[in-house]
Each structure stands twice: as structure tokens, then as C-alpha cells.
Amino acid sequence: MKNMRQKQLIKKAHGSYGGLLFSSEWKEKRKTIITRDQNKCRVCKSSKELQVHHRQYRYSLVLRKFKKPWEYPNRLLVTLCKKCHQQGHNKYKVPIKYI
Ligand SMILES: [Zn+2]
Ligand SMILES: [Zn+2]
Image (cartoon, rainbow, N blue to C red; front, side, top):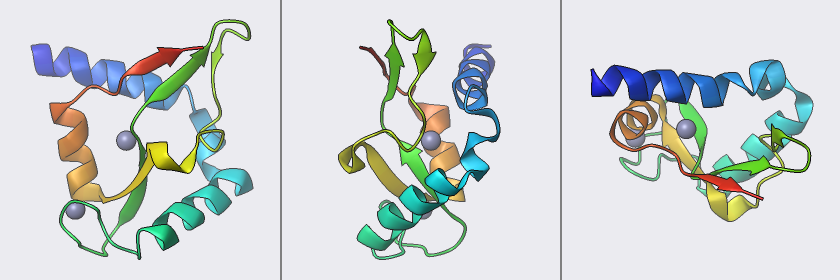
């Protein structure tokens, strides 16, 4: 049960990005991060199905919304393959920083 609730929370956080992950700003940022990580998953070194993961979400209390996915410093973004990314999200909850 605990796992399911966590999954829903993650879905919510990711879902708040909506279609933003398809925007050109994100595509650019994503490319920057994956290139920095030498086109490899940081965990298993695979180069298949790479995704960029946020180590932290930032919520602006003033604007009452989450930061846009590309508005994060590069150090908070890591390249992961699809498999490690899913495993990571199942194991850990991404911390939310209120700013
Ligand atoms: Zn991996
Ligand atoms: Zn992620």
C-alpha cells in the first residue's frame, strides 16, 4: 500500500509538469545534462533509453507553483536510463524544497 501511495505522489509531481517535458526548453536542457554525463546512465552506465531525473523539486510559495523542469541548476539533474529511473522513483521520494 505504501508503495502505491508513493507512486501516486510521484505521478502528481511529474504530472504537474504536464506537457512541459515536450517543450523545446526542456529538450535543450535534457541534451545538456545527457552530454555532460557522457550519454550514460549515472547508475549502470547503460546508454539505452536515457532520461533526466530531478533530485529535488522546487515549489515557489510566491507563485504557488512548481518551477519549470528546465529552471533547475544542472547539479540537481542526473542522467538515468529508464530502468534505473523507475527503480529510483520506487525507492526514494524526491524531496520538495519550498522557496
Ligand atoms: Zn541505468
Ligand atoms: Zn525522476
